[in-house]
Image (cartoon, rainbow, N blue to C red; front, side, top):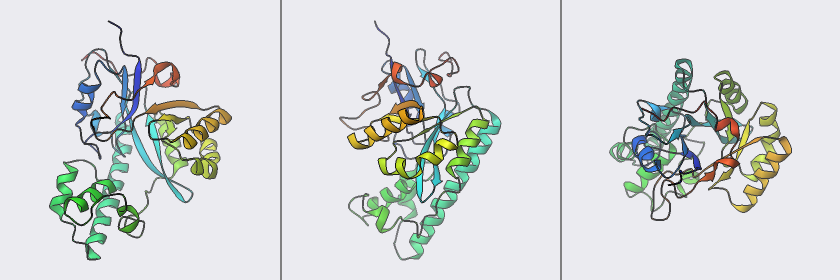
Length: 272
């Protein structure tokens, strides 16, 4: 029986705005993928007491929301050497900033007359670190909107929800201090053009060229950017919810296509 050699280095759990627990993600990856990384938003909570079955490797990581010029971008931070207490303390600060930003936005939303029910928000959070997507889903749950897509511009914009405190260049510097690597998550072509050079100059390690969420134009631009600046490659599904067509393991990238720095011996032990 051949072992799997496909990886998914961008999965979400209930610790941020995913639907599955970390244990469920690991269980469903086992035997289907060779290596995964749970990259929740501004938190490493998924890795607390995580049990990893034999045959599966787990690369510790998380997804940072950062300012880069006029844009808020997502950067993936990976830690092949593992997690340390100083790293966990720093990420806790990012988690606290996210929690404060989102909950202050919720208060502004309610103060402006939009009757978002806290019970609906708590039902979406399920104990996870709050994201605007939780708020959007809570508004739909409460019957205040039919779908979440238009809500980000209509009610969840910058007039109520503050930008992250973290700046992209500072994020890269901090991750490097903790022996980590930073890859640009699902970059849009326009963002690559406008702020890409500044992130490269700050020490960006790679690009998520093989993201399931990239359309043909953005994927081609990401590939060109990666080659131009001689950066590494990673890829993943960015899976938040399972559907009939999209399940854990239904999207994977061949190990040979991934930056070898992410696939080395520093990965988490598979024996528990």
